[in-house]
Image (cartoon, rainbow, N blue to C red; front, side, top):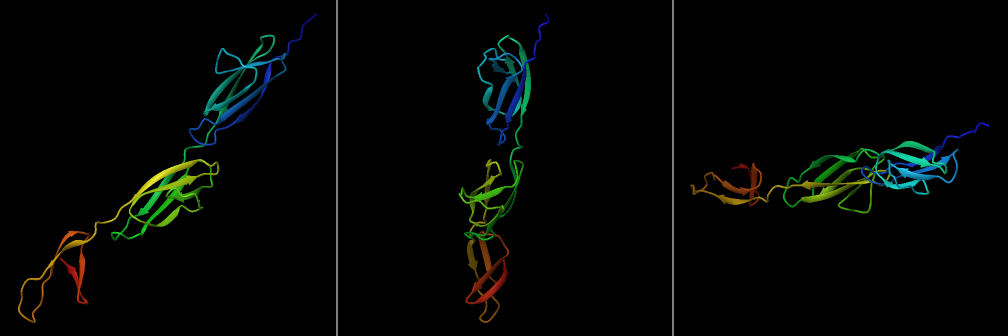
Amino acid sequence: AAVSITQVDATAVITNVLCNGATTGAITVTGINGTAPYQYSINGGTSYQPTGSFSALAAGSYTIRIKDATDCIKDTTLVITQPTAISATIVKQDILCNGAATGTITVTGTGGVVPYLYSRDSGATYQSSGAFTSFLAGNHLIKIKDSNNCVKDTIITITQPAQITGTITAPSSCPGGPINLTFNAASGTGPFTVVINGITYNNVS
């Protein structure tokens, strides 16, 4: 009499990676149509396991081998995907006057999975807009979080000019005559305006 042989097959459930570069992918394969019990190996491994569950996988292609009780084999190739990496486009305004808190940073996220949330200086509170104001000079950490809770950290440096320092000299002149002031700047950004006793002198050198 003829012997009917049923080919081993498989059903599979794939868990894709949520954050680019992570190893949170998983594959669960179940053998069918063969003779139980089944054994499973991954990517050509010679060691089999009694379950078809494989975890802690990065994005990529994986071949799962199923072997049934009669040593019939079925190879199934499956692909785990991942989102693109989150990146940041940055527009900043540095401080114009030394010591002021007028720096601004606007960050726009790309990659990952939209929508994004943003926080400043490691704050636990996120907002939907990447626009932030009132920064002092220094390094500031902006966090971008996508809808998979993947986070991208970006450090942005706000600069400021040096504090204005210098000396004002007035050469001797005749009483009642014009006074020529010279401002010798040691730091700061010219041209300068000097106010003496309520009188403003513009474009002082």
